[in-house]
Image (cartoon, rainbow, N blue to C red; front, side, top):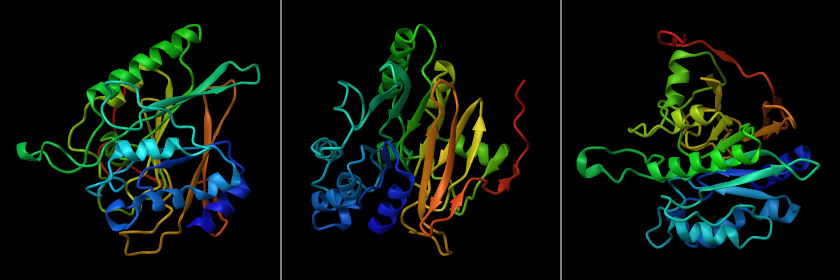
Length: 286
């Protein structure tokens, strides 16, 4: 994986590398700290800024918490993550502002912790975790302040987290999408806590990017927001070939738009992914 990462980064020369979770499998590593540092070695060696959110596998080891993981990433020279805001659920919730040539805020990148597994199993609610109310409040408050600072106009923004929102299932089932869904299920949480609605209301986030489902790389648009998967760097859990790689994102300065494409391990650049027509009744928006 490190060879692939190095080749892609040297070819694309990004300004920022984002890990969308499951950086390590902590319960399968005899030394999670060393494993985490090794996973981050390439951008550190190439002196490329990087940031990360955490997935369900990152903190499965009983003696390795997400708080420890977040503190660990902050010790790296080229890590651009920030300390956690107070009284916000999870670890690894932060926002990065991107400045233009005049050193004024031109865009924002939100990073949120989608947790690991449900804490409500005793109430019959199992499966994966979800974005909590305190995180949504933090996002809306932060977004509001950035909008005020920008003269009342929302900053063009992107969101990064690990576990997909329930709306990812909606776009595959009811809208036109582009890309592949090779996982049997879209492993979204069982509860919809309203983060997507908050993004629509705030009007700043143009697109979101998630990991979690190793065989999915599709994207689709709902209510003006592009919901995107990345591209896995490890072909796990799949019984068919799926070339590993990365998703590249390019923001357009001064505009509310971005472009994105796949850069695969074998060097292939995929800009036009296969079209998928909705399997259910198309969503009607009036």
